[in-house]
Length: 113
Length: 111
Image 1: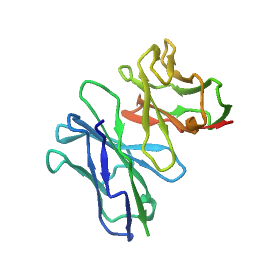
Image 2: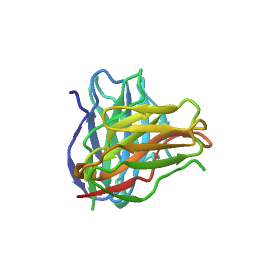
Image 3: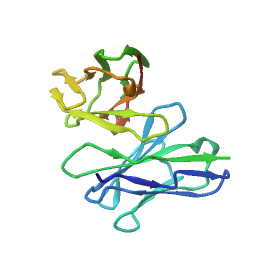
Image 4: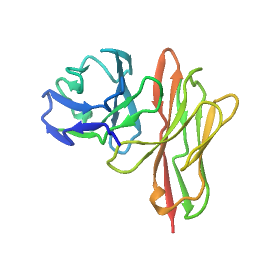
């Protein structure tokens, strides 16, 4: 069964550094998403992406964040100048154009020191 | 303010039926309601999805009233492995469209 994959599984970075989180969505999916989950809290929507552009974004997704689909398979989330409060699990998800069910990756645990 | 509300936690015993309700008062007209299960340090896993009335699959049922302002996930006979956090996910209309996860319900199944 195809799955969404994410790399790395864990990342530790220093405050102020840039990080890039990578996702490989399921191959025939066209809608892509990033979510964040701070430890012990609920999952929060960050951004959705379709047809090479952002379709929706939340208040969390400010100028510090950007997304990109650099090639036909990867979908990345870049966080510029990381802050302590960016420490969280980041989940990527994708879905087919004909259904709303999103399939989630295993997540990247980001720790900002 | 668009928000979803779920009970924080529920306790049950093996073999019982568990019903978890999510309220979503500002659900967007054309959006589906999706429920996910999450184990610690894992991504949410799809359980069931519906638009209105009742949907059933091999693991759960989903009940949605006519006004769609709430939904109830029903797990028919829970086992210890169903201990997890359960989230509803809906698209909500506020000042703009937002995808919002519920706060999550932590289900503990006891032997």
